Length: 246
Image (tube, rainbow, N blue to C red; front, side):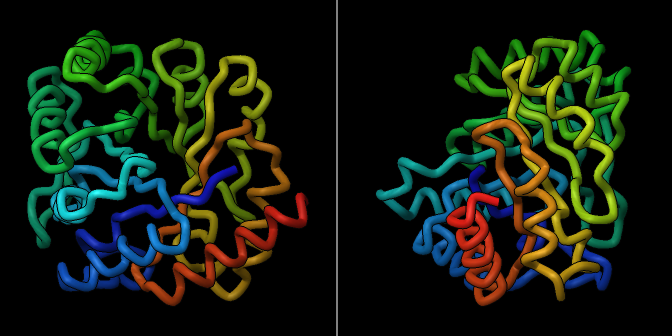
C-alpha cells in the first residue's frame, strides 16, 4: 500500500471544524514537504477550490516530479467559498471540467468520477466523457463512491481501475468489496482513515485498521492534513506500520 496526500484542505474549508485553507505559499510548502519525505500521490478535484491550481503551480515549478501521481475528479464543482458545491454529470460539463483540470494541472494520471452513484456510473454521459478523456491522454479512471451499491456498479462496469471510498474504525463497509476489487484488478484510494479528524488522537490505530483490511496491492491511503508537521507524523506512522507488515 502507498501513502498519498488529499489536497482538499489547501483549496477550501474542510473537516469537522471547518478549517480555513492556508495561504498559497504555505500550501506549496506542504506539497514540497510531501515530495521531500517521499509522498508522491496527490488527490485533488475541481470541487476543492483552488487545490488544482496550487498543485499545478507546484508541478510547473519543479523538474523532479516525474514520479508524482496526479489524481483528480470530474462531476462536482466549486462555486465559491460561501456557496455549496454543484454536482453535475452532464456530458458537456464533464468535458469542460476535463479541459479545465488539464489546464490547471498540465497532465492527469487518474481521473475519477466525483459523487458517483449507480445511475451516474451507468450513464452515457459519463462513458462519453471517459472516452473524451482518453483522447486527451488520460489512461486511468476511478469512481469516488459513498455507498456499496455504487461501488458494486463501478466494479461491474469494467470502466475503472480505481475505487475511492472512506474506510476507518467507524466505517468499514467497503471492506466487504476487497475480493470483488481483486477479481476486477482494481485498486483502492482510501479516504478519511481518521474519520475527518475524529480519530486524530489515534493515528496509529486508524491507519492500522486500513492496513489490516487487506486492500488490493497498489492501493493508496490518503491523509487529508493541511499541516506539514502532521503530514510528517502521519507518514512516519504509516511507514512504521508498513515495516511491521501488519
